[in-house]
Amino acid sequence: MHDGIFHIELNRPEAGNTANKALADQLRTAVLNASSTSGVRALLVSAAGRNFMAGGDLSALRGDHNATLDLVRTVNDTIVALSECTVPIICAVQGMVAGGGLGLALSSDILIAEEGARFTVGSPTIGLSPDAGTSWQLARWVGQRKALEMSLLCTMVDVQGALACGLINEIAPKGSLMEVARSRATQLASGASLALRHTRQLLRAAAGNTLVAQIAQEGEAFVQCMQSPDFSEGLAAMMEKRKPRFS
Image (tube, rainbow, N blue to C red; front, side):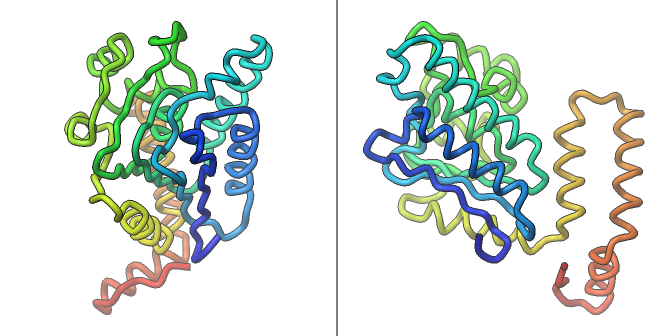
C-alpha cells in the first residue's frame, strides 16, 4: 500500500493472466486483505504483461469437474468480496479482457482501458455460460440489449465501442495506462473517504431500491457525513478558497 492506495497486480503474464486455482486464491486473499487493512482509501487492480485476463486457464478447465467448480467458486467469492469492499475500486486493463477477466473488470467503480484493449464474454464459445457475476454486472453497466448481444454472439468490443456503450470510463493512450490509473486512484484516495464510501454504496444499491427506500438511505448517510471531520474540513476549505485536506 502507498499513500492510501492498495494495489493488486495480476502476475501471470506468460499465460495471459488466465485464471487457474493459484491465481484465483491469491487474488481472493489480496482482495480480502485490502478490505481489512487499516488506512486503505482506494483499491487499484491491474495486470502485468500484454493481457489483463484472457479468461480461464483452459488446461485447468480440462481437469476434473470438481476442480473446475472449485476454481469458479473461488473467482465468484472474489467478485462478491469486491462488491462488499468499502473503498472505491479502479481497474486498469489492457489487451484481452475475457470471461472471468471481464467479470473482474466490471467489479470496479472506475474502469480504465488502454488503447487496443478488447472485451468479450467468451464462455459460450466453449460451451459454458457466463460466470464471475458477468451476466448480472454486464446488464447493469451496458443495459440488457447490449449485454445479450455481447453474451449470445460473443462479440469482441474494442475500446471505442466499450466507451460508447458505458462499459468503460476512460481510454488511456498506449504506454500510459498505469500513469492514468494511478492519477485517478490518487484523486480518490485524497477525497473524503466517508462520503465516497457512502456514495459508492448508495449508487450500487439504487437499482434494487424503491425511491422511498433510497431517499431514506441517503438521509442516513447524509447525517453521518455531516457529523464527520471531513465535512468540517471541506466547508472550511471552500470558505477559505483552498484545497481540502481530508483525514
